[in-house]
Length: 277
Length: 297
Picture (cartoon, each protein chain N blue to C red):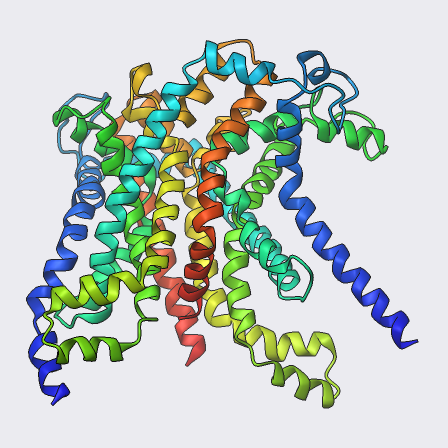
């Protein structure tokens, strides 16, 4: 009786896990499988859930006949640039709101969190003329500047959660040794919040890498387009090629997934710590 | 001794300012400057991008509130956000409860549950547009073959379906994010509480209501706030799935503002709508936090 009950409990548990995994994975599985199917199989009335024939045809075509590589490099450039700047800004600000005492600290921290309520479209409406005046429209720098602005504030919150986990005895020890504030920040705190740096970096990288709205307006010429915009465009421009859509999707997903495989767990940790602190 | 050094070295307010000023300058340029310009422009009559415009007071606001298209987009925004919050929190809850169980591969799935969030929206929109296509989509194929429906469902092509479909797709992307946060709060509930409750004969439902729920409230409250603010702000997903259509069926605030600003080039009207949206979010956020804090007292 007891073992039967246990069996059904286990069964229910694994069914729930399977359902969750199915919800998450099925669309991704589908696009992955489709990217390797020959065109004939792609447009069959009866879709195949496991490809009958496997081909790299669409991947090769995509890389040769579209600007995919250019868009790809632009995206990597913008995302890396934003991530580096966000890491610098947020580790300074995160330490400042956690460990420094000054007038307006609480207020600044709240302001940073309040950017949740800024409508993105509103920003775009007036960043566009601003960049136009600075001659930065159609320049990848405009995207970096924007992405840092919209991702940095929330990452301060993430970074702060990591700072709070640093034991203050270490700070005391450094003080006794005669270290000044900057040294304490750079030599004691920063090395210990390395996971936080990873979390913030992946967060801003992902956001900048996949951003569409700003990239679609601030970049005009083809050679500076980032992946989301370039991809959306060439799929509409030509007669939709399902093969390109699938293989392009898989290729776009790859860099973020690889990056997440390395530092994703730090982000999860930061989110966890940030949520309960 | 250490107290003395600490006070001498750490109590230097300038250092704190010095560290936070870079980010404040950055967001002043990229966030506050556009906001101020938007407020200013909402009182001018710029009918076409590039004009200087003339001060016309509250006319734009009056016109906007009299605009049926705008009022409808307001209602759609409420429907869109409300449904997104409900669905995302429900899914996140389910996921968090599952991930809180002991099973093989639990650690792995706890990290990789964020997979939908890792994938760029543009890719998701394209994948789902394809999968939900009435003729070529795999979803309709499965539905028809299992006799769940008799004719293909126009998920993104009909006014009746498009909103629900977009809500589901958007929720699919975002729920893992909240699942991680809710899971975090589940994990700090002391297991002894459940054991004690079991001894007292509390049903699982009672345990949920009297132990789980009160403990996750401190996380759930900000999560729902963030979730709703982000839902109102969604542009990419709707635009890439539907362009706000068919008709105007999925034209929420951001879509409305984008169309006014970058397709019709009516800068003042777009700015007015954007300021209205900002104020709406501000008021909502304040009331939300106000009510919730009152409840806690």
